[in-house]
Length: 73
Image (tube, rainbow, N blue to C red):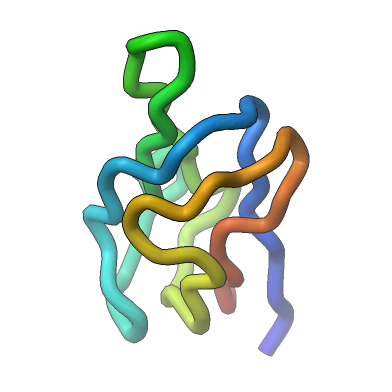
């Protein structure tokens, strides 16, 4: 199956992961939330599919452009 990497647009700390490996997501569904400058910024899926891998865990510090998850579609 084709895959797509979901990346964050901001640097910060992962404060929530509302999806699980094997779960279905729709285009635009939130994959993670990154805390930056005291705000929680959602990281949305860019395609509908199944979560193949989550590449981060809660409280990880991520960089702008870092992959958060891989979606199969």
